[in-house]
Length: 116
Length: 111
Image (cartoon, rainbow over all chains, first blue to last red; front, side):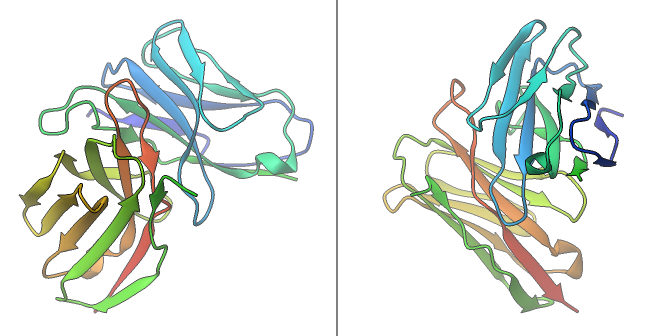
């Protein structure tokens, strides 16, 4: 079944720790995205990739980094976690979908990160 | 001012009612309009997609775009408790542009 997987679902970590949030998709989509979502707020794009070895920063200033070595894998890394990084992180991918053009985004279930 | 405005709710209606969810926007270049549904502790899922103006119907859901008023709507007929979720609108000026999201409206359907 085509899907997108994020791990871990929940993470509580101390300030200063390095963390990597994992995201993998099985649909062969070239485009992948990382969004940050806080309660009552719109999704903010923090990183995106249009293919292997291609990564760009989004609109939201972020201290995280991403890599895209394989089509299916798009991990996000925080070198030194801070309480201000506490949020929900959503990974998504998109491809051309009948009826939805280029806007058939498929989202993972998210990683809820708490930095203490 | 945000490019896309959406009332956060919550909007609480009885089962079987017709629900109207709305977004306004300021960028006249937006051509592609989407509605996503997000259940608690899940990622958003695409519900409806409309290009330019007009209506689109899919089962109990109707998406409407009024570009002259910069206003989009999602109507849900015969609402069910399973429709309880947060509904996010999203829009884009084209394939070279990222999606711009509304903050979402929380909808509660009471049995």
